[in-house]
Amino acid sequence: MSATAPCAGPSPIRRPLAAAALLATLAGLVFGLLLAGAGPASAHAALTGSDPADGAVVDTAPEEVTLSFSEAIAVGDDSIRVLDPSGKRADTEAEPKDLSEGSTVRYGVALHSGLPDGTYTVAWQAISADSHPISGAFTFSIGAPSDTTVALPSQEAGGGPVGVVYDIARYAAYGGFVLLVGGSAFVLVCWRGGATALPMQRLVVRGWLTLTAATLVMLLLRNPYTGSGKFADAFDLAGLQSVLDTKPGAALVSRLLLLGAAALFIAVLFGTYARREDEREKKDLTFGLAVGGGVVAMGIAATWAMSEHASTGIQANIAMPVDVLHLLAVAAWLGGLASLLVALYRTPDIGSAAVRRFSAVAFGSVVVLAATGIYQSWRQVGSWSALTGTRYGQLLILKVALIAVLLAVAWFSRRWTGRLTDSAVASEDAAEEEPESESESVSADPERAAQLARQRAALTATKKKRIRDADPQRSGLRRSVLAEAAVAVVLLAVTTMLTSTEPGRTEEEAAGGAPSASAPAAGGPVNLKMPFDTGGQNGKGTVRIDIEPGRTGSNDLHVWIDGSDGKPMDVPELKLALTLESKDIGPLPVVPDRLAEGHWSASAVQIPMAGDWKIDVTVRTSDIDQVTIDKNAKIG
Image (cartoon, rainbow, N blue to C red; front, side, top):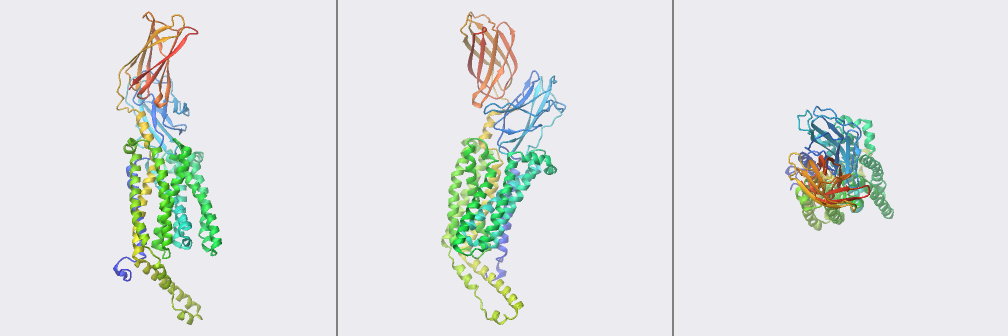
């Protein structure tokens, strides 16, 4: 048999190393493939409209350029730049003005007066409320389109080599959190004897080191990740200070402080707790460590919840604690799984009771994951079309499929657990009993006694490994747990990609609200007729409105007013406003110029997106007689 003949197969020592190498290789391949297919990190916020619109041709130069977004963003001095056909700045280079009203998020920059005709480029970059950088560019023309020397940026914010390293650090941070929290929980809840096992200590400590290093890398790269994209800017003190003033920067610093508390927890767990022999004292210390460690774990999990998807969008006050529960359940399940794998491969002492306790913990974690995952999916996706038609939805489907595979493999592990006995452990205990006659005969020679002790320890360890590897139940359980861990590596990578991908709900809303320049929305001239009565003398009449071409972008608007006798009628004041209530856009004011008796006109009226627009018309026929009428029209 291979257990007794070294030449017949891989040695027991090489098997865990091969398993670890396999998992590391699989992690690298999977994460590399996901990064290759993902492109630059998408974000929660999205551009929903602009004035002038993308691709629009306006007759006269606008006084300012405004951009609308799906949610709150953070902007800087150069967040919105307008460049003329030669590449020079056409804006005043002042900080963008916050023009937001209610739920509408809008920013604008003023333009220089007297801009010549031609094609202008608007380049923008900001940081969304969930910490991800966003950027883009579009063009509009004054008078008529022209050639331009400005090249649209090919790399979005958060892309390039800095983006790749930042995403790897993000993945490593999740992995370190899983090992730190899940490994500690495994020792306290499932296998208290693991506190004295060196492989378990190494697992938890390496999880702490990985999370700490990844957090430091993310903190240093935060400035170039959201800005220049250059590694050299990682050590720019001014940039680092600006990062510390942001919500993501504060979250990363808070995580580092909490990791200091986690280091103290680890020292007590594998120091004082491991050496404690009195059962009552150990029970009290277990309770204290569980409470303290739970608080620290929740705090670390909250650093993700407070700075990413859960912190923005609908029901953020509910989503953040739900996200904390979700992360803790992931850590308890996947981190416990990694701990069980290490215990089965590297320690001979774990018994069936510990495996069964982990089985119960894993079941509870899956229940929590199901409940929190359903809520998160509804919140971030919102519709079946977003589930199947967006990248976020497709990644979510892949995540659910991987969880199903993981549960199927776990079912086989549970079957092996049911067959597992502690007979191998008893055999190992018997194997430790060695004749003491030789050691007694050389007790007078301390050096010889120490040599024999080392030989006896090595022989005992070899026998333990041989007995452990010969146990078919443990071998079967090790294989199934290894398969679970392999699937968990892929699952963690997909979860990491989800955190940096624009949610399906937002992507659909942005796609419905931002028309493409290459495919302008179809439409036709809009003709409206609205009777009015201001209540005063000669206060009755009819307003006729024509909007051409009646689509998104620049439109010409004409208004005629006829009196009750059907003849053109002049009024002291005429105002219009356009509102798209379904998107919370407007009212957009329009003040037409009088062309002739009873005829007013306004050119370059911008319709930012297609929809059912409400057109309000205010007519004043005297100093005290005025009325506002409205009518809906389909534009675009």
